[in-house]
Structures are given as structure tokens and as C-alpha cells.
Image (cartoon, rainbow over all chains, first blue to last red; front, side):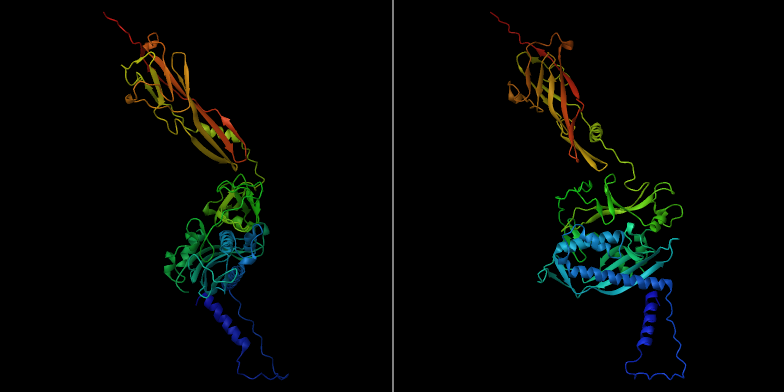
Amino acid sequence: MSVGQRGKAVAAVLLLAACGSEDSEPAPPSPTTTTAPAITAPPALTPEEQAEADIQTTFEQLIAAWDDFKANASDYGGTSGWNIELVGRWKVEGAANADLANWIAAWRSSEIEQVGRALVARHEVSDVKLDVTDQGIHEATSIACLDMSQLVYVEFEGGAAELPETPALYQRWHMSWTYAPMADPASGTEMPGWYVSQIEVALDEPC
Amino acid sequence: MSPVATLLAVVGSSFGQEVLAVPDQAASCPPGTLWNGAFCEESETPPDDAVTGCNQSDPALINVPCEIDGFVFDAALDRYLLPLAPGQNERYRPPDGDLSHLGYWTGPQEQGWVFDWRKLAANWSLGSYAWGDRGLMWLAEMPGEQPPVVVDPEEVAQQLLEGMTFEPLELGLAPRPLEHAPDSIGLVGAPVWMWVTNAGPTTWGPIEESATVGGITVTVTAEVGSVTWDMGDGTTVTCETPGDAYRPSLGVRPSPSCGHTYTQTSADQPGTAYAVTATATWTATWTASIGVDGTLEPPRPATTAHVRIGERQVIETG
């Protein structure tokens, strides 16, 4: 079982334990004379599992922010460096920061908006390396597959956009990740956490 | 192992091996277009109406922002710089940094810092900035703390000029010079044609060369303004063109562009021939991207050939 599958299995067990059965009757109040069931703490994630979960959450947030921008592109632009400022709020650094800043600028230049959200169909985190330095820096790589088959592209006025080429329905993002143990605004790290440092996008078969 | 190499090393174990053959889509957009996350979009030309005082030379962008999201433009290095976070910086410091083998740290291990550097690309729209080349570099001092680079544009221009090649002229003469035809002889009162047989960039110009030092681009342009022909008989002829080549089919007529007529024979000259010396007068001008310009003194290569001039003797008989 991969780190990801193990994490999902744990999550599923916890979910079932918390929800119980929909068909069951509400449990009567426990008699005060009986012993209360012991509250069992959920099994703690290993550091690697925690890293994977954090990376997946961060990526979901990144794609959501990227989708939000593409869905509201007409609201952006006009102020100097607006795209740099926008991507500066995302958990990306280094080459990934520069690439996304460029993609944002180019998308705005396209004068289209996206209707719908990209679905993160798969996201496998691998090669988690904890404490690669004494300063608490971690590294990881991951590959995500985005299902963009349900997206529609429209002009700012709402009409169907005439695109110069047909966008791919699926994108595979190969990413390098770095964990920043502490904030360092002077270097662009606003808060501790995982940051995407490199993105390579490939257009692939369905996820 | 670099991040890219690390990434590729794990690709094979995720989603199947076929991924290795898929190129990075963002890197495969045709020239003049940018990847926008879905397709390749035509890029735009940056505006040039803002005056910031910061100028990027390569690629050339005038009045770029002096600071972008923490990246500070450094004119001497012609790029934007952002210091790495302390923890990241230590990764590159030899001998113990886990990334020190990548070789970015090029100075003493106890000195300096590694910087993320970027350049602006020539693609802007609606106030956005597009990044171009980028990388990491080690600097001994923080930007701004480095001693300022003093650039004398004229000195740069002079160095450019000294690197240029100025080749001597090859002379065309009618009558033919003795160097090519030892028996050739012209006549007093007959038109002499002079021309340059090898007019080209290194003999006539123009030659243009540029260099960028400390963010200032200096361009030097050199070309021949005229050729001064010392005909050996005490007269000089200045021609502003390479001249027209003579051919026998033209008969006896003056050159339309560069000619002379001897009034005395060369009998009393050394070797009984006039020494004809052609000197190319090069002019060189320089301009700098900061709006100053000037002139330089290029060399004046000279070439000498010899022509023998005789006199027609009329013998009356009867």
C-alpha cells in the first residue's frame, strides 16, 4: 500500500467511525451507571504521510486558486506587476513562481475565462526526503493528473471563445516540492509550509 | 542531483513509463508565443512609457521596474536578484551543504550568499511582467553593497575600436602600377584613373560592434570617409568613393570619380616612377545607451604603388 493509499484508508476508517450507520436508530442516552466508552485517538500519521497530505492539500489549493483566476480573468490587470503579486500569494517559489506568473499574464492576454474547475484526478507524492538539511528543510516530488475535460472557455462577454488551438483535456503536472520550516518574507516565503519549486506540464492520455 | 534530475528519476515509478517521452508543454510553445496554462498564446510588446531609470540590456528593455516582488534590479549584473532564505542558502555552502556539489557557490565558503536571479522577457500585457531567463548565482556581497562599477563609455568604445580590423587598401591604377606590370608606362597629359580594388567591410566599412559593461551598451561604428591619394608629384587627390575601375574599352577619358593628370614625367623620380600612396581616412563614432556619444581616432592604413609616366615624342620628318 502506498503512502497515499494508506492515508486514505485511515481516513475512511475514521469517517465510518465518526458517521456510523445511516439506518441505525439514535442511540439512547447511556445510563449514568455504565462506563463511558474509551475515546481512542486516531492513529497519528507518519511524518511522510503528513508530508504527503500537506502536499496534496497545498496542490488542491493551488489548482483552486489557478482556477479562480482563470474564471475571473477580466477582473485582473491594469496595475503594474499584478500577476507577480497574485502568484506571490500562492505556495509556489523559484521556477514555479516565475512560470505561473508568466502563465497568468498570458492567460489574461488571451481575454478568455474558464467555466468549470479542473479536477485533480490523481496526485501521487513520492520521494519524500525529510530533513535534508539541519535547518529542517524537506523535499518531495509528485505527479498530478488534472482532468480538464469538463472545462469550457468563454469570452469576457460570455460567448464561446474561439481558441487558436484546442486545449488538452488532461494535463500531467510533474512537480518538485520544498518545505520551508519558517517564514522569510525577504526571500518570498510568507509562511512555513510546502512550496512547489518546479512544474513541468505534459499533455497526456486521460487520467 | 538537480531537482529536474530528481524529478525525472521518480517519473518512471509513477503513472507508468510513457511519461518520460512527454515533453514539457510550457517549454514547447513556438517563438513569439507563451504558454497560458491551456494553450500557446501570442505574446505582446512591452510598453515603454514609464521612466524608472532601470534599464535591462539583454534582452533590451528600457525603464523596467527597479523592484518586482522582492526581486531588485542590479544594473551591474543586468538582472533581478532575490537572496535565498537562510536555510536554503546553507544548502549551497561548501563543504557541507547538501547541494554544494551543484557548484553555485563559487567563492570562499565563509563569504557571500546565493541569489535567485531572473530577467524580464519582452512580453508584457496590461501591466503584467513576464519572466525570462532565471537561475541561481553566488555573490560575494549583497547587491548594493558591491563597489559601484564605474563605466567610461568612451574607454569602452576605444577598446572596441582597438579590436576592430582595418585592412590596407589594394590600389587600382591606370596606367597599371609597376608592381603588377613592370613595363607599364603612362603619358604626361593623359588621364590617370585611381580606384580601390578591395572595398569591403574591413577596408571601407561600415563596421559596427557593441559591448555591454555595467548595464551600459556602447556601440562603435567605423567607416571610410575618403581616400587621400598622394600622387608623388606634389599633388594630392581626395576621393570620397572607392572610385571607378578602368577598363580598356573605356578608351582615353578622365575618371568620373577619382582621377589625376601628370604634367611632368617621372624621369627624375627614384626608380623613374612616381610613388602613389593612398591613405584611407576612417571615421569612428560611438554611442552609449545612456544617451552620450562621441568620436574616435581610428588608424589610417596607407598603401603605396608606383607608376611610370613618360612623354610622347613627336618626330617630324621631311
